[in-house]
Length: 174
Image (cartoon, rainbow, N blue to C red; front, side):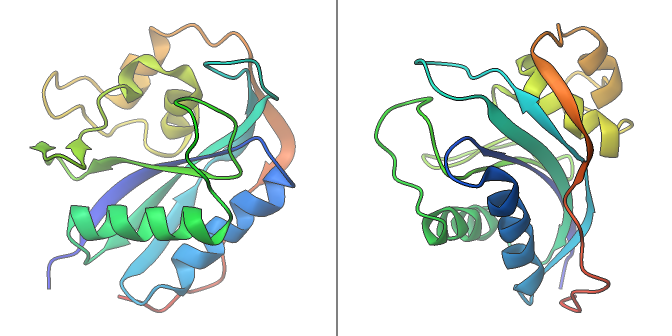
């Protein structure tokens, strides 16, 4: 069984967003093939797209024996558990989970592109990711997450003091 390190982004701007982000991490921790290794602080960020409330964003590092497509399906299922309804692109949502990276894999299928194609230009993803994985390298450019993050404007991104997703002591899993 191969275990891969993965990075995901979490976001929410409807409902009790802090509790929703915590619940999403707890759902991942309960899965037998996933271990949550680390999570970032939570950041309040300005939305991209139509007028809507600010987002709460975070990133997490996972270890998983699931293939990338299966991990994506798990993320989509967890979104559904929290009432995610896809109505409009970049619209408000209770929970958004994006698979950003799986090791140094490059993949393009109808449902999944790795690395995530727009993460490199989005400070609301890169700032929390740089907090927990600054040395992870872009599979194509070779730049680190920290190097890429340093080139992005971080206007409208504010770390919430004392707000971090709490991890369980051990999720067993792998």
